[in-house]
Length: 270
Image (cartoon, rainbow, N blue to C red):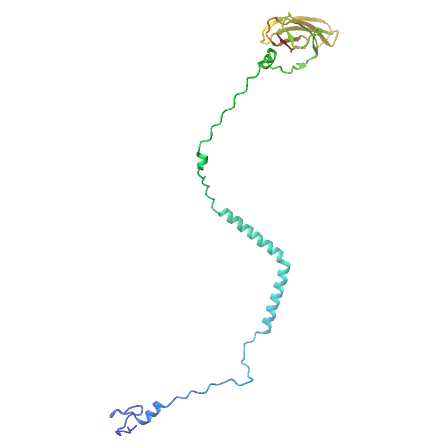
């Protein structure tokens, strides 16, 4: 391309003359020519933009799945609820088991009012001593009487009684004479219809001291009755002591080899 100013020929792609430095005429026009933008393309009226479509088989399967899910929830909602409750209870129990034990409570310090010494309380006067017991009551407390048995080792006391005089009753007094009677059964009879019994009577004071003791009385004779009758009388000492006096009746059976000791008491006071 020739320069329009100095007429020097330049290469085709040059923008300015290499000799004079002026811009080449053809390149200047092309360099400063306005660039025209193509007009925007508008969519023609009445033409829809294509959109992706869902296949009809997929939509039908999804609808059926939702329908069956609703039916299953309607029929099985109660078992599902029970399973959820069981899972919740199991979770709560495991949480309680793993939980750390609570630290022991620290006792609060006593208040200032509690630390103060309580007011003095005057002790009540002791009650007066009880009146002294009578001699018979004191002796009864010292030697409590037990209920005597009616049967011992096969022998049975069918009767025992104290015979009091007119106007006399228990307790008796020092110097009184007491009488009584008894009946004992249960002894054996030999082949020749005989009995062989030995009786012993012992009378003791409340301290266990023997006051009277009879000699052994043996009965070796034909049997006359099924019971053995005996009577007795004893005198209470004039100086006591007060308490329960004991009568011991002993029976020894030579035919059977058995023995028994029956004891009865009577109370005496001054």
